[in-house]
Image (tube, rainbow, N blue to C red; front, side, top):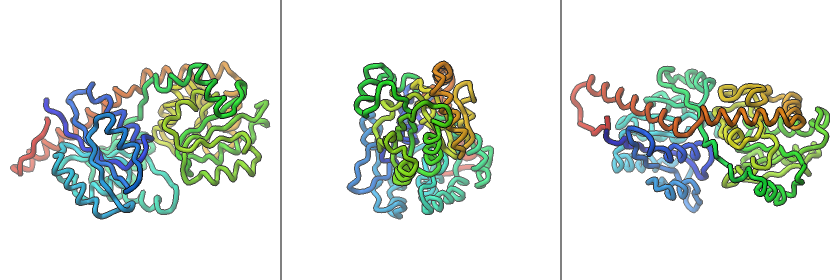
Amino acid sequence: MSAIRLLAVVEANTTTGPAKNLLQFAGHLGEVEPPVELALAVFRRAATENGFIDAARRSSIPVYAIDERRVFDARVLSRLRAISREFQPHLVQTHSVKSHFLVRAAGLHKGAPWVAFHHGYTWPDWRMRVYNQLDRWSLRAASLVLTVSVPFRRELTRLGVGAARIEVVHNAIDAEWGAADRVPPARRQWRARLGIGSRDKVIVIVGRLSREKDHNTLLHAVHALPAHGAPALPWLLVVGDGPERAAILETAGRLGISGRLILTGQVPSAAPYYGIADVAVLSSVTEGSPNALLEAMASGVPVVATSVGGVPEIVSHNATAMLAPPSNPGALADAIAAVLEDETLGRRLAESARELVVSSFAPAARTRRIVEAYSRVLRVSAAERVAMGPAPSRCSPL
C-alpha cells in the first residue's frame, strides 16, 4: 500500500501542547500501516526564533516555513496554496483556530480531505475569545474533527459540527518519560539548585499561565493548607509562562506566600520539576486531555486535579488521582493536604496512575488510531468521488 502524504498545518514556537503531540505522532509513524509521509507547514514571525521548527528538522521532518507579519496575514493564503501544489497531500491536518481558519479560507480542503484537531480554547484576552468564534465557520468544512474529550465533542456540536464527523482521541505519553529526573541524584541536584530543602514538600503545576488554568484558586488553596492539616507551607513551583504571570505574583504577594513560590518561566522540559514534586496539581476550570496530567502520571507523582473536561475520562477519584470541583480553594486544599500528609495514599495513587499510562495511553497506540481514522477518511473521500462521476484525476494512496 502506498504512503499517505500528510500535510500538517500548525502554529507553534515551542515544543509544548499540540506541537509536542505532533512530534510524538511523527516519532511513531514507522510503526503503522499504511505508511505516512509527513510534512509540516509552520507559521513563523520574522526575526523570531522557532524551537518547534528546529526540533522538527532535527527529527528529519520536512518543514515549510510560512513567514507572516501579523496574527492573520492575508499573504499566507497564497503561500499555503503554493505549499499544497508542491507537496500534493492526500490529506491535510490542522491544529488551532488559526490554522483551521486559514486552511478553509485558502480552499485547501477542496483539494484533499481535511482533518482538524480540536484541543479546546484558551482565553488570554478578548481578542482570542473573538478568534475562537472562527471555528463556527471553519470546522463545518472539515472531513473529520479529532478532539480530546467528550465535553469538547458536545461543544463542537453546538458550534454546528456534525456529531458523526467528530471523534475523541486522548493524548498519550511514553511511560518512561522523565525517568532520568526521578532518580535520587537528579532530585537532590534540582532541589539544591532551586534552594529547596530535602524534606520540604513541593507542589508543581505545569501549563500556560492563562485564565482557564485558574492559578488563582491554587494560590488560595496553598495559602489555606496549614488550616487544612498541612504542618508547614509547601513550595509551589509554577512551570510555564503566559499573560497571567503578573496576576499570579500579585496574588501570591497579597496572600503572603511569595517566599514559597517559584515561577520558572518557559522551560525546555518540565520533567525535572516533576522529579522533585510531592504532588502535581491541575486547578483548571476547563481541560481537554491535558499533557500535564499524563506527564505527572508517567513521572510517578500523585495528582490532584479539578474534575473538568476530559480529566475524569483519564483518572478516577481516589483510585488514580484525587479530584476536586473547580474554583473551590477549600476542596482543592483538602485534596492536596490529604496527599501531602498520607504518604501511603500518595504512593498508591501514583503507582495506579503509572500502570494506567502503560496500559491505556501509549503513544504508539494513539498514532495507530489516528492513522486508522485517516484511512477511513480517505476511503470515504474516494467513494464520494466515484459517486460524483468522472473528474480530474488525483493520486490516492488507498
